[in-house]
Each structure stands twice: as structure tokens, then as C-alpha cells.
Length: 302
Ligand code: SF4
Image (cartoon, rainbow, N blue to C red):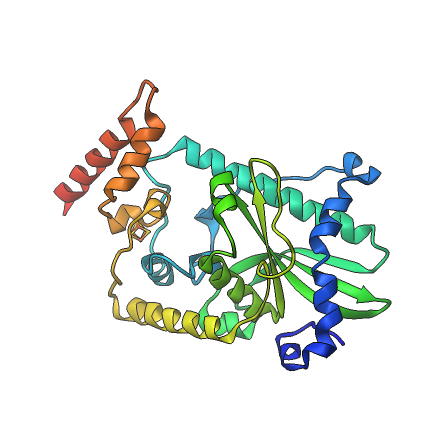
């Protein structure tokens, strides 16, 4: 009757139906918590850490997109804060961290008040010291949370929680989880042996939350894991050979800790976006001016 490991997914649906059905109630449980008296009496802390202190290796959040950051990381290349700092981007990251902390806090409270029916573990670490899979691939990450559902002393469901904040425009257009978030979640699912994951998308404009049913509640998929292994094999090979994969430039370059050595040609659409964000401010084209100054300096050093 339980759905607590990836192996349980091979059991007949009729045997795991209840676990899936109860998992689908997670959104309702989260919403209902806000109406209880304990809500207003609680408080939570937010850690505004940066990626600077991350261990070198594979990180779940880099499971898609540009191949280079992981190769640089596997080689132990220095990470440096971007020279072009976009304050608006920092404010958006900060808001995302606050929302993460708030939802994680909510689940800690829900578990504490559930009289043993729900357990919750926040920021579940994954590293070579606690996972053979992480050891094999050099994975260092942490999952936003793992929710357990219990009948007396028996756990019958384990669900990973992946929190994603979205602008109203992106949230409204979305009809299923972003493939890059499925890739990221699959790392957590495989390493923590989680059969189910709830991609808890949160609309920053109106506080709407994605349903905890399909497609935002999904099961582990072996084919996604195999594609990740293929990517990592290539990245490890580059790290061993001292070579680099092709750059994949985009907005990510503006906060990438390896931009200082990668020296990407920032695409025009990114520059246009930066210019637009700066319109009406005194330093209208300051960011683009600084960007070109950095490029000139880098090329004169080579
Ligand atoms: S700066 Fe851009 S292209 Fe270079 S490694 Fe980072 S994300 Fe990739």
C-alpha cells in the first residue's frame, strides 16, 4: 500500500493509489494552515547565502542549460561574483529565498501540528558522504524538502518538495513543470529514493500555488535520469581532458560565477533587457558601458 521508494513505483497502481490520492491533498493542507491560529504566532529565518560557498561538483540546479559551469566546478575553478551587478536581479533572488523559507517554515509547522501524521525535513542534503550515487558523480545539492505521510507508525508516502517562484506572466502561461525543473527534481528523487515530487510553483503576484496533482505532482522517470548521466559523463570527460564544451549564453551569464574566465559574448537580447531595466535611471547605460569595458580589458589581457 505504500509509495515510499522508487522501487514501489513498479507495484500495481491499485496498491499505491491511496498514497497518490493523499499526496494530491498537499496543496489543500498548505492553504488550510494559513487559517489556523498558530500561523500568526510563528516566525521564520531567511538565509541569504550566495553560491560562493558551494562545493565543487555537480549541482542539481545546473542539470540543464549551459554545460560549462559544471565543468569549471569539477575542475575547481575559482568562483567570482559577477562584475556587472544587476540590483533588480538580486532583489528577485532575495524575494525567492524569502518565499522558499516561508513555505519550508509552513511545512515544518504543519508537521509539528499533525500529531505524527505528517513529517517534514527541510533542505535535505545530498553529497558524497551520504549517498553512493552522489559519491559516484560528485553531486552536492539539497532538496527543498521531503514530506512523509503516516498511518500510526507506518509511513505510506514520501514526496519531495521543490519550490519555484514565478512571475505572474510565466505562471499564467505555464501548463506543466518546466523541463529543467524536472531534470533538477530527478537528481533529488534518485539520490533520496523519492518516488513522488511536488513542483510547488508560487505566483509572486497573487500567491497562487500550483496544484499538488498531475502534472505538478509527478513520479520518478528513469529516462530523465539516463539523460542526466549522459550529460554528466560528457562534463566529467571535459574536466579530465582539460577541454570545455560550447558556451550556451543567456541571462544566466549575468550571474554566472565563471563569467570572469568564460568571457561570454552576451547576446543582444540580454543587453536590450539590461538597457530596458535601466531606462529612466541616472546611470541609463551604465551596465552596458561597464560590460564592454570589462570585455575590452579581458581581451587586452590575453
Ligand atoms: S558565463 Fe554563460 S556561457 Fe559562460 S559558463 Fe557561465 S553560463 Fe555558460
